[in-house]
Image (cartoon, rainbow, N blue to C red):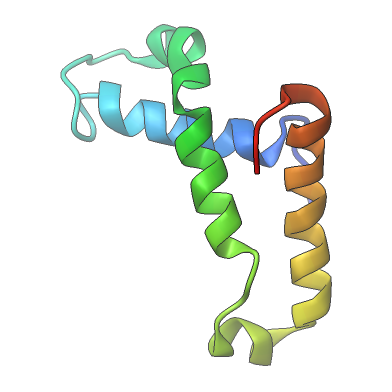
Length: 89
């Protein structure tokens, strides 16, 4: 299984920035990569809100695997952000 070198919060924030900026989504920039690189930090709070929502798996997710492990993994991602970002949880 591949492992990302970016934090989960950064990856979510980059997706949100891409959706807002790219003409392939809701934006108007046909080549949004550099803009996403510059602005993804502006989407960190939204990414954290999404991640906090994902802490608790739904019934289908829980049935598919280890719900307690899922919660620990999401909490670990949030703890990284607490340590490096100083964001309020």
